Length: 286
Image 1 (tube, one colour):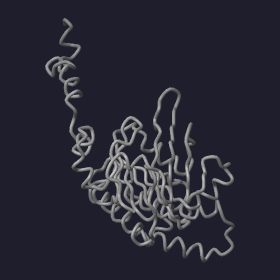
Image 2 (cartoon, rainbow, N blue to C red):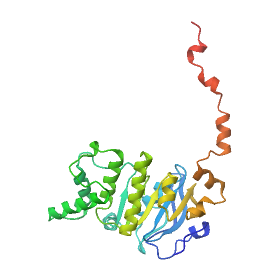
Image 3 (tube, rainbow, N blue to C red):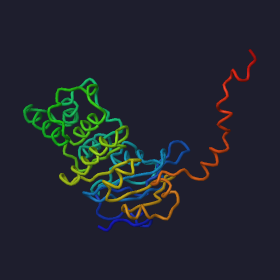
Image 4 (cartoon, rainbow, N blue to C red):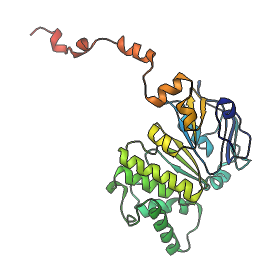
């Protein structure tokens, strides 16, 4: 399947992708967060969603597993429409997905092993504890943390918590892994460990990967395809070269981390440094 090179392709949600949104609109009150979004995710590839804060990135990926339902439009997994299913049927669908939440979302009262076993217990009756222990060991080894089974989240570093959360996300051998800001709060070295794990799982297990991030270093390292959202619309869609050379000034400002001239003008009009340094006592008589 040829990678999308522009907005025309981004709007086409047809094809044989594992995930598809068709004309999805999501509103919260009068606020339109996703505006007639159509796209297809190719099986076994890594798609990264970028865009400014509040543009709808997390809302978008939550639609893939129907944690949020669209006001209009349709959602498909493996050619089956799922946005119209009840929660019982959705629970079965969701076993094909792993979700790494931004903060990790580990249960503080459970050990590392118990956190990883949690989704297994939610969906299956455990009859052979030794096999479950073996599974936990295997998942932790994949993220480089075998031996941490008895630790608790409070005793782990931020990077370690993210890796345990990732081990939990793959506990059910998902076909799709969704990552919400996986490197947020991590120093560059720990962030790169997460990037390497994303690549390892995608290449080694053949999972389909969708990542939401602001971290352009991560984006260029892991992405087969990059989608940029702005005001609820897809304004760019393609590989790294396409995004780097995109003609839209909004895209260029975001990927380069540049403040727009309009924002600079507002900052410059917002009072002077000298005025801001004045303390209340400077205006009062002794």
